[in-house]
Image (cartoon, rainbow, N blue to C red; front, top):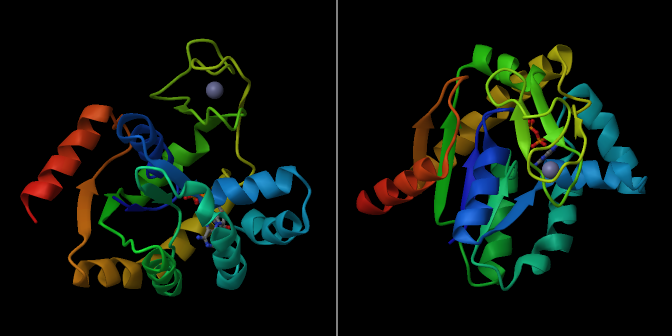
Length: 221
Ligand code: ADP
Ligand code: ZN
C-alpha cells in the first residue's frame, strides 16, 4: 500500500508518516528531509535547493523528481511507502504515478490533512524537531513539549528549529501551498483516492487515529 500525504506546512505530515512507519512497517519518503540532508552534507543539489527553501518557494520540479527517482529503489522490499511532501503539484503527481507504475505499483490512498491557515502559523513557529535523522521525532513548544527542554524524549538528541520555520517564510510557503494544492486535490479526488481529515492546531495525532482512518477508508471504498 502506497500512501500520499497532502496538507500545508506543519499540518502534521511528518508526525503521521512517523506513525505509519512504526505501526504499518512502511517506508517514508520526505522530499523536504532529503533536501535538508543534502544541505547538511554540502552537496551541489543541497546548495541549489537551499536557495528556494530559504525563500519558502518550491524547488523546481525537475530537480525534485530526479532526486526522488534516484532514491525510490531504497524502498523496494518495504511494506509500501508514505510520501510526505511529494507530490506538491499535478506535474509531480503524474511523475509519481509513472514511477510507481514502472514497479507495478500505484498510489492506493491519499490522506489530506486539512488545517486552517492560522493554525498552521501557530504550529510551525512553535515546532521543534529532533536533530537525529534516524529518530525524526517532532515536538511543539505549546502542546507537545519534550520532557526536558531542548532534548528529544525518544533518543536524547538535541532539538532544533528548522531554518524555514519563521513567520515570514511560512507565510510564503502557505501562499505557494494554496496556489499549487488545488489542482492536486482535484487530481486525486477524480481518482477517488482522497480521504480528508479535518484538523486544528491542538490535535495530537495518535496511532489510534491512523488505524481509524485506514479502516474508514477501506470501509467506504
Ligand atoms: P513543509 O511541509 O512544512 O513545508 P517540507 O519539509 O515538506 O515542509 O518542505 C520544506 C521545503 O522543501 C519546501 O518549502 C520546498 O522548498 C522544499 N520541498 C520539499 N518537497 C518539495 C517538493 N515535492 N517539490 C518542491 N520543493 C519541495
Ligand atoms: Zn530523537
